[in-house]
Image (cartoon, rainbow, N blue to C red):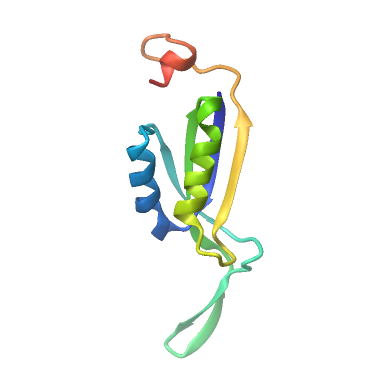
Length: 113
């Protein structure tokens, strides 16, 4: 099992969600986030005054998937969320040792289905 964490632009989330749903991925954790990287924030103007916005809004999408699904899901995230511009986001992949459903005590793949 692998955990995929994708940091994406908020405006790309609905498209990603629809595509994930179309391939049977329904279990997601979604968090509003703010961050900066190479994009370095952006300039804003309020009542004629220019100011620097250091942290930009992002969405963090997390899911645990079977290893045979991993490459297809990563490709789908890239296809759905890429604009070709700085600030498109990142994908982090990490191993999952165990999954346990609290309510029933089920473990492994049964706990996420």
